[in-house]
Image (tube, rainbow, N blue to C red; front, side):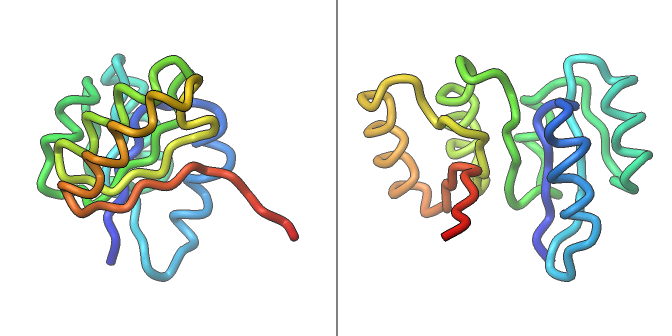
Length: 126
C-alpha cells in the first residue's frame, strides 16, 4: 500500500486528490502537513489520515510516507520537490513543475540519484 503525504491544505488537494486517494485500492492518505497544525489536523481527520504535521519538513522526515503530493504555489514547486526527493520520497507535484526549464535539470539528476519517481500532475485526456 502506497502511503501518501500532502504538503498543504490547498483547495485542489481537498477537492480533487485527497478524495481520489481515499477511494484508491492501492494507496492510503497517511499524513497532511500545513504551516498551521490545526488546519493539518482538521484535514487529516476529515480524510482519515493518522498523522498531521505543523511543518512540511516534519512530514518529509516521516518514515510513514512513501510519496508526497505538492499543491503549493508554483513559485515553491522546485524547492519543495527537491526537498522531497532529498528525503527519498516519490513526488506528484502540481503543474507547472517549474517556471524555468533550467530549474528542471537539477531535479532530474537528484531524482536519478535517489531513485524516486517525480511526476507533474497533468491530466492527458487523449
